[in-house]
Length: 79
Figure 1 (tube, helix red, strand yellow):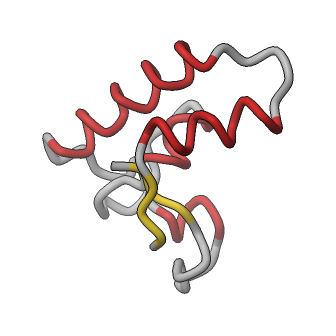
Figure 2 (cartoon, rainbow, N blue to C red):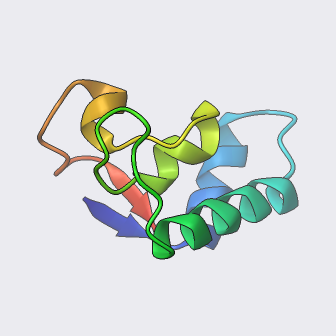
């Protein structure tokens, strides 16, 4: 994973998603990271959640369950 701050990711997200509020995106990301830090697990396989994917999908999932891939080296994760 390539770690990126919530602030930096939120800026990228709103740049590519017209109509999204940066404040709302940051709040959603913070909420998901807080769940991740408390041990939230993937609803499919039980692994720790991928905060970035879980924030925008509507359910808590891990990277592999979201993408079907095991190599996460080119993807972001927020902190």
